[in-house]
Image (cartoon, helix red, strand yellow):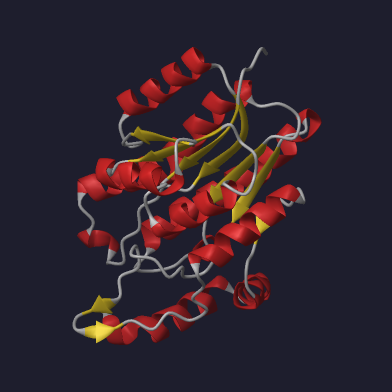
Length: 256
C-alpha cells in the first residue's frame, strides 16, 4: 500500500466527546485528522480552533450515500489510517413503544450499521499497529428499560468490537470497545418532566477520551474509565439481569 500521509478518522467530531477525542489526537503526529460530523458550522469552528491539520467532512452516517462518499474520498486520497474512532451515536430515554420509525432506523443505522461499514472501509488502509476505537457504553453490560434501543445497540457494538479484536490480532490491528457510564455532554437529557436528572458515576468527556486512547495503545479490547463502571461491570456478572433491571427501574421511577 503506497500511502502518502498518516491519518486518524473521528466520527461524531462535533459533540462533546468528539471534541475531547480531537484534543487528544492532536497530541500525536498525524498528518491529518479527518473530523466527520453533521453540523457544518461546528466543523468549521473546529478547523478554526485547531488549524489546517483538521480535515472537516460534513456527513450524515445514517445515509448510505454519505458513507459511499467517504469510501470514495479514501480511495482518492489513499492514506494510511492509523486510528479510526467510531464515536457518532444517538440515544433516547423514553418508552420503546414511543419511539418513532425514524428514531428506530437512525439509532440502528448510526450506532450499529455505520461503525461496521466504516471499519470495513478503513481496514484496507490500515497496517500493523492500527487501532479501531468504538464508543460503546456501560449500558451494553445488561438490558436497560427506557433506554432499551440505545443499550441494545451498544451491546451489539461491544460484542462486535471484542470479537473483531480477536479476528484482527494476526494482522496487528486492535479494536477497543469504550464503555463509559454517563458522560457530561449536551447529549444527556438533563431534565425530565421538570425534574433534574441525577446521573450516578458521571464522568467528563476528557477523562473518557484520554483513558480510551491509553487503553487502545495498550491493546486492550475494552476500556472502562472509572471505578464506578468497573464495579458495575463486576456486579452485573454476578447479579441476575432481572435484579439489575429492577434496581434500574427503581432508580428512574420518579422520572417516568
